[in-house]
Image (cartoon, rainbow, N blue to C red; front, side, top):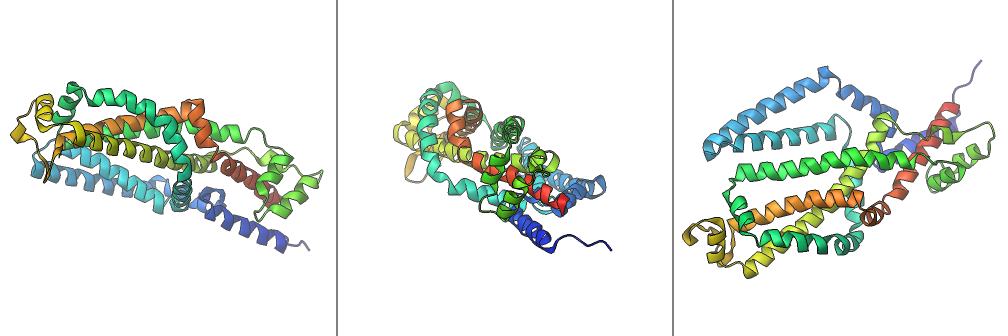
Length: 336
């Protein structure tokens, strides 16, 4: 008669899977990973995608007709498509724990935002301020209708996310390259696999480090965590740039100057009540420059060594822990 898996091992594996879910590692759990893979099959994915596109096209046509702006249609179509993709990821693709944990970690590490701002913002503001006090930048931004301006903002945002999706997998690959017994013991400390890790490391016949390579859905789980955390921090910095230019413009940009730089009449400058300097043109140029700054900061925080050290020092330990716990989990599951 053959006996089933050790009950204590089963309990440890179940506790580890709960730990994975609590730490934004949904795809490290086999059942969650299988559900996400099934959701990407054409028979599941295509009906939802078709419905989203149909609603987005219909809504875009209606908005373009009501606003009499042709560019409102593609702007709404792209926005609705992105929102639909996010909604599908949060539900069918089981990405909600991933996004929730990444947002929690990003917002919980705001104390690191000030050092990043002291490194990134001075040179950026010095450069972008010259664009802000440039008549051509005002004329270009003010000439854009809302739909076109929003398309430009989305374009900068998508370029930034695309850049992150290309570069951040390198950080994941770099983390699982140098896994040894000391790495595993350090990673599993304080987790449900703490005791099991010490047992496996001490067993000459076991080799949990051989399970360290992260691929497939699990690899993209870690990349998604990095993308969300990086995006939150960069968006906060870009929001700071937007507020700075709104405040700076409200202080120094007279309505006559705004009219001259935008090619409009003073009477055509729309502003807030009792705030003559805060106009639609000021908001448009500030938003345009903030979107450009978002792309610049995204590239800088990944390629510049000073920025990379500042950002990845806060997440490298999380990456190492996830890789180490996963390796011991897989080794224990195979043994059980």
